[in-house]
Image (cartoon, rainbow, N blue to C red; front, side):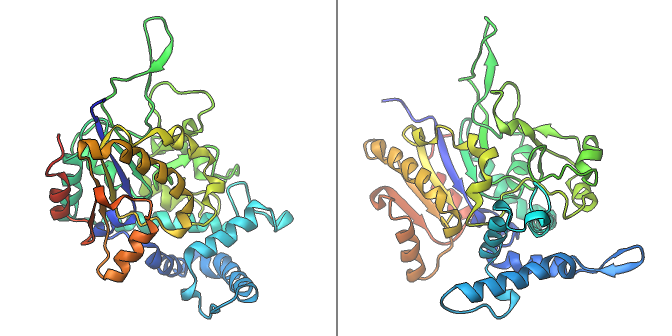
Length: 382
């Protein structure tokens, strides 16, 4: 049997929570607060809450209370962010507004919310202290070449830690090169850590998605000042839409300069319908069903498989089953890290992950910490 060569990590919001990044339950409150900040244009004060968000919030509450059974929404703070964004997604995707549809990048509230999400996350991670960063430095120091990380987070905490510690990494698993005959082939000697950002990133911009064709878009006018670099290095297939996605520097300037209802960073909003918008990132999933069999460890950190990410259940099921197919023979383990204190929450979590084989799975319900990392990695070969 082929020797395991790498570890696979599945990373969710709980991984970034120790750095102060808000979970979905808190994110909506932060979005509302930020949208109500007073702005000034031509000496006239206004807020994007009153001008943009509030009409859509009122429409959503009327729709929800008029069409759903059960408890009604009384106050905007009680809105579930994922449900609200899903409502906006359907409205935009089906063109329900007709001629009032704003742009191919989405309607105004959709674009505004993506910008607020990016700004909130950027502001929070910018406040990280040197002490806060130690946990992530510890994590990346335990990685080895060819390790595969799937993160569903928008923040840039992980890639900054990799860069801070001079660890080579790539945003795409398939690295191509030319052979002596000029043919483009897979570079099987690639030693990068592979970091796949499955829902985009706050410092990614796409030439094709979430940017209006309007000249109001700062990306269309001043693209070069953000030093954009394609997330794919070297050769790639011509039809790979990842070629249109760029990582930028000077993110703070971009977020302050862009028109907040015209363009936004390339992130998949937390929505029940996000698979509709995932086409540009489908390459990350290409051939994924074959993963797991040859990995040494399968490690989940802070990913609770939430209902709004239900589409992920299917690929994860096959990842786990492939891993299990030979794990018992080699004494290879699955590690699950999450923060669940009560036995009720722990049992609910396990029921959601019912496809896991608990005979080869270790659960760590104390949350993500350096102590947990030491436990997980104590028997992992470097």
